Length: 238
Image 1: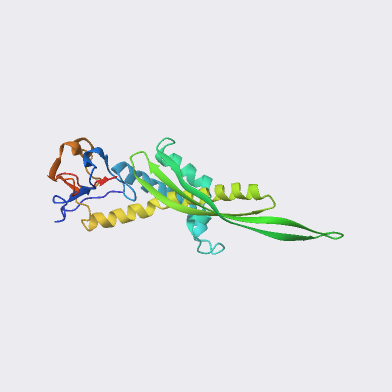
Image 2 (image 1 turned 45 degrees about the vertical axis):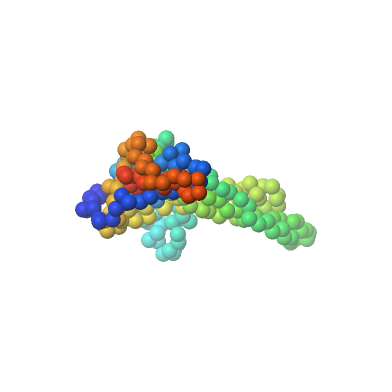
């Protein structure tokens, strides 16, 4: 996959100012580049394209089989297969998953009746629904976040909680890996429309130079401190 940049747009952030509350110095904050939902390098663009080709080859016959209908890809492709594709594409140490949050939202008990030939017994079962939020980060900083659901019914409440959370995390991971396709498609559209003013992959030198480019505009005890970052394009202060 090859992406070519068009001439830069007229949008500029040269006059952008940042402010802090009284008593805070903006120089104490670390300036970082946020690559959520955007490729951080040509490497990630190429590798995500390779991942998509693997997914498409695997799902082609399934997705075009009327027996299955038009289901979401996250339901058609097993989680272990996606993880294998990710390891082959990015390398075992080229990506990682972080669980941002996982929580069991509801637990509903009900009585299940077992009608046998000579017996009529009942037992209490539980249905637990869990939600999870995970973040997948590539080694160059490209990252995406997605949520997933897990629903388990068992006679053991504790086992229900554990397995529903595990299922929710697995579902979120599958959706996150599949969402890289949308990142590339959105990126290509923005390149075509001259959306980015900081180059294809942002300014890598900002991390080293940002601390020397502060110009104080005002600093009093009663008013916030305003800072102008001359060259801090495409960065976020956190």
